[in-house]
Length: 489
Image (cartoon, rainbow, N blue to C red; front, side):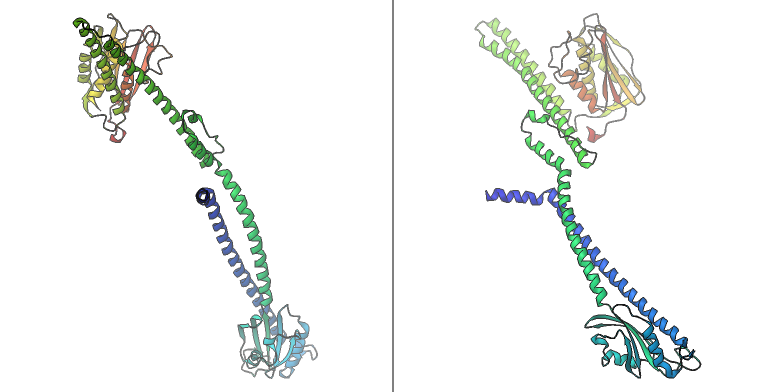
């Protein structure tokens, strides 16, 4: 029981549906992690850029104020009016959240906004002392106990000639705008936390949906497996899988159904072949056994019995030989190709055929040219057609042979003025053990035309049949002039 359960779990874990879902989750999780990390970094970058723009804007506004006039005197600010400049700027400007406007006079913190300052910006902090000693503008970024701090420090120089800030005049004070980004970073982290929660929920819901969709998509495969496993006898060969859609699964379903059609046809053909073969073998065996059981002591009777037995054994031997030919026709080395002159070949076959029976033999025409073919097999096919014609004609009937080479193909025909073939039989006469009705019967096992068909097919050719009951039949072998490829044989 435990082993069966373990195998069940093993099949489940290694199933295509589970592997598809696993890869889907891995892909989605990986892309989500990368996306979240990239979003977080992009948001931090944007926060820093926004803070830097805000700091630069405050410095530019301070510079403009330095170059303007004192509203109390209506004159440009003088060097002793630095504190008035600081008072005016701090009073007019309201800092953003987490932003601090600081003014330093004589190296000490003078005025600031807002009033409450964090620990890194206290009057006696190292950072304030550093800023108080500046003589050149400074941009900085430092880590504090409260988080990252960005700042711009602007030394103040005021002269009577309103010299530029980079003048060599003494520094009267320092203006600093600072910003602690901890608040913005916390907001970014909170937003990322929400994104992570939503991503997990969406990924879970998407995985459930993907599991259901994968099951729906792979349903034809499970049905295919179930159908394949259920094929244990001939009745199961009739099962087919319904085709849905036009994707690769539907194409696989169509291919499987076509394979089932071929298997069913092959199985039915094999079963019919076995039934017909057993019948053909059973008849001579029954005849031989019956004669042996009735065999007496009379020498004349023994001689007649032996003649019957030998004749039946010969018939069985011919039947087995025909089966071997059909079996070899499916092998790669069935043909021994050579160059065959059509004219001389036609004359040779005609000479052999006319000895089969007393008929009104006629040679219609002889083709000019040569082909690559198996002379012996091709002779066998045409002689079989001639033999077949003798069995369905009378002494005064005409049997004609001929050949022609045209359009890259050689055509060999055998025609007769015999009984003809019923229209209903013309599509099945080339099948194994097929025998015509309406009087067109032979003493053979029904393999002659099947052998002809196999030989012509091995040459990459085909057979054309033209027949009318009561008028006669014409069998035409159409063989390509070019040789068949070795791998096709």
